[in-house]
Length: 446
Figure 1 (cartoon, rainbow, N blue to C red):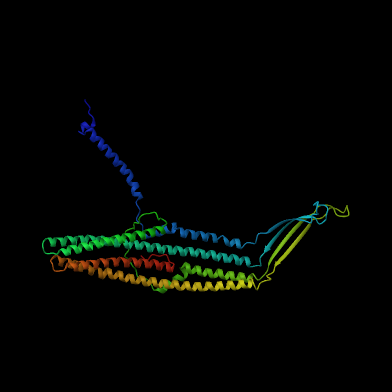
Figure 2: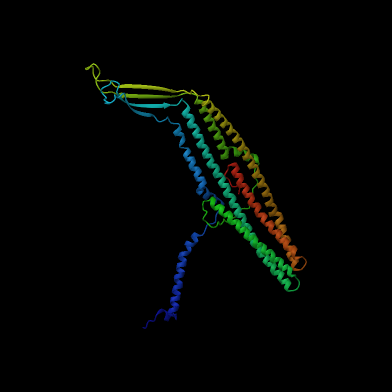
């Protein structure tokens, strides 16, 4: 039996076979590369994912956390006794021969001196340092809270711009249909050329609006990426979901009570008061003396005089010292006044911050209620009515009962209402983020 090449049996030329082999190779390579390309595509970013990334990677939060860790190492340092002083002395060596056995008072001394602050001083120093470290931990929590609020705010701004861009796209498509209707009526002699030009003009305005919204979105996306420490990422793709739930909030007094116990900033201010109070107590303790205790051992060489009375004995010396606050009126008394003023300043600062927090809570609630009411009005009243108006005018224009200018105006009005609808939703969500930050409760009211 005679065999034939495969291209002859399949009636395919060698050139065609080579062509198909090349395309098959390209297809295989494409299938191999496709998963990698898809893996490199940015995932849809949910608001929770954005917050998680920012809290994990934000360098400003990280550096403040390291500062807190450093402050936690201070209390044990300041609460420990001062390091003892060890001395080595050469006493009473005769000149010029420096002979150790010649004079009876010649000796080599080894001593140690330990200072003891007045009882209670070390405890107060350690206590003040612990309060300062605790205040730093509250400042880390406060920065985290503000970071979360800022990330959420930026996320909702990007969300609004996405919805605004989608609204503009849909209106562009609608105005293209308007142009076709106007052109058809003009070509049949029952319409005006100015209607076509007016529709084209409005479409151009929508193109300009698209350019502006895209630019604003890029700016907000960059700022969101910076907060997440991913400034090199070109774009942000938000996850698609239904975010239109805007629940009613409880009375503002409920949030006031929660803020007192939850807000890290208020905790920080209270801790600063405690630290200032400990420093004031320490300043008062400084009017009491500190002490020092020392021991010295003197090694002597040679024999006693007259000869034969044995070798010279070594010396042991004890020392007790008192640090006298001799200039207390110019030093310790002034330090007490300084610490008292600092404590009073901490009280005023806490009172001021408390007022600011309560004001921020009230403002956030007011902004949320206003945006929520606007959103509900646009959702259930204005936009359905405006849509019906546009549909009615479009039907009337098609039978030459409505002026084209009024149709265009009604559609532009509907576009503005749709943009205000999404803006109200975004502002309500941002107000919630500010409310959570003001209260100190990391809860999403979805």
